[in-house]
Length: 107
Image 1 (cartoon, rainbow, N blue to C red):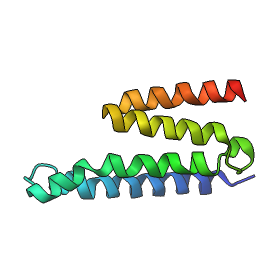
Image 2 (cartoon, one colour):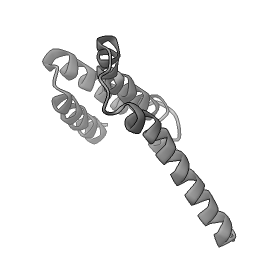
Image 3 (cartoon, rainbow, N blue to C red):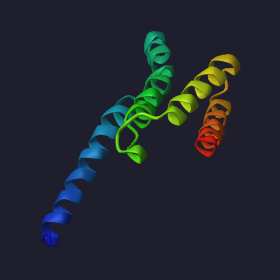
């Protein structure tokens, strides 16, 4: 059993750390005009984050014990194809979900 003082100390320190990280960006430069090149780069942040979140779930899925399977790879390819063809993020997500459930049902 972990000491409650230790748990609360860790929670408070992590909360302060998270606040300082966010405040350093939003609080200090949130009301200033950013240069065009910075605004252009910030538009690509979600595009860079999504593959980082999805790739481990496709390549090393926990549901299969870490080994890749055809259903998840097929769903990722379907989501990529739908996203590239339509330029619609929600359509790509829903299409990938539909492909995953269809491929899991078929296999």
